[in-house]
Amino acid sequence: MNLGIGPTGSPAQVAALQQQLAANPSDRIARHNLAVELRKCGRPDEALVEIERVWNEGLKLAETATMRGHLLADAGRFDEALEAYREAVRVKPELVEPHSTMASLLPQLGRGGEALDSLRQALLRAPHVGALWVEAMSIARGHLAWDQLLDIAAQAEKRFGTDTMISSFVANALTALGRDDEALAKIDMALEQEPTYPPGHTIRAHILLRKGDPAAAAGAAETAARLLPKDQSSWALLGVAWRLLDDEREHWLCDYDNLVMPIDLGLDPRLLGVLEARHQLAAHPADQSLRGGTQTRGNLFEADDPVIGGLARATKAAIEQRIASLRPDPSHPFLGRLSGRVSFPTSWSVRLASSGFHISHIHPAGWLSSAYYVSLPPEVAAGDGAGALAFGVPDAALGLDLAPRRVVLPQEGYLVLFPSYLWHGTTPFESAAPRVTVAFDSLPVDNSGQPV
Image: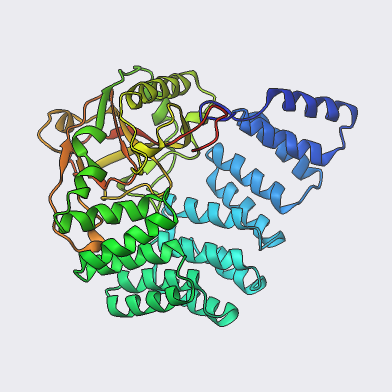
């Protein structure tokens, strides 16, 4: 059972693979699998030794090149990692993982303009692979490369014909470019063909909010939430629409007084140094909310580190104690999923430099999200509002001038919990010292560790 705490690999599986290799040292697949398992066990240095050995012995699979890229990146050898990923897509252009990893890594190295290069080349070599087109459009959207997204989508439509997913990407790009009428016409036509496609109704709600029609937007968001109730995007837009309509259901949904939950977790003085060592990149990921800072790679809470492990366990205990005090509501997207236990599918650290901030955003795939304050500049710790966490201000792309519903002033050692559909962002700060936080998305799980 993996709850997102500590290494996810199996020491028993490592031992079995090592025994297999002792009997047959030339078993290259076993050595590849050993490298994979060692990495899962939080032993990347040993894993890199094994993957380099099997690579040099001639196992030139795209999957091996991809794992080699991951391990080189884990070691901070980013240029070599990129070369490994390029080798992977040269061998097997239809393999999505190295493309998506490069698209995420390149902007963090200050080379965001190259993010889509490998996918564009792959589309020329394997144009029949639909997953490549979807990934290319997803990356273009995440990087706000709207003209590129429209270009890729037009090529995809020529090859595959009219498709609701492609139309949703197009509508997303058109509304981002201010072409709301075209966007609405595009998504309406698509939904006529496939009325049960949830993302289509979500983007329709977004467009209608931009066009000043919160009542119609609420209807579209309600449809999306009914079709895909665990997706946080529709609930986030529904909260905005209900607010504009002065609908009391906004307060039922968001309940900022009770569902934004600061907790004094305490602070291990060793944690800052441990996190600083993991901030190896030069810039923020292009598809994330931070601006003017860096983010750690991988799932932080799965690190084989006693300090991080201690934070993960303390966080889990604090969350489960806090949610035990909440009153279940079966009709509520957050309170209707209280199970008493949580997992951490994603966790990371953010280091913001002077003038850094988070744009207002949500976490579409989460349930419970967070901010844990590890180190604050004096200007933020002073409590005058710099670097504060503001809730209820929607995405700037909606063009709405709405004030925060609640503002939380950061304090070192405090953990702030909130439903993942709540709009949240931070105010900029000016300081020579960075602001270091840990964040995660958490999901409710049953006794077997499965999400509910």
